[in-house]
Length: 213
Image (cartoon, rainbow, N blue to C red; front, side, top):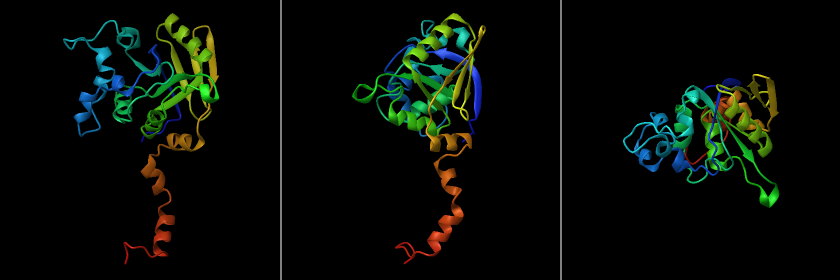
């Protein structure tokens, strides 16, 4: 997995809440046994017209967002089924980070991302950033107002920096330390385990198991 320390790119707005994984990558694309080629099918039902041509009404098809790599959306993004294909599609479509708002606290809490989707993102090098609804609304308005607006995601410092023409706006975000360590060092779950290979071998040599009997 590629390491993620900082990334700067154009922000594209998907002004919709509760976007589920079937909307991100529809079920008909799950038949592939490969982990590649999903990018063009991301948001398929919104992205294309019946004849297969790009839908000019879909916000992410606008020319101003053609080179985007940071997705701005609303809460509960990635809900629905646990298909990892949704993250593969987004990553292969060029997104390195996704920003969404949380709402409320305790029993009234609505997260920015569904838990399984968020976990799948971390395993595929996509950074998920949760900010307050007020902060996300502020970013939406800035993106709508300024074409080609870029942001920098600094995972090490846990900051999102919006590069407005009038000056930078900085937003701090929380991030799980263990997940952050894997992303910053480009480690998937297997690579993380391999760091302890000497300890694993030592343990296996000193413990009888049914596999060795």
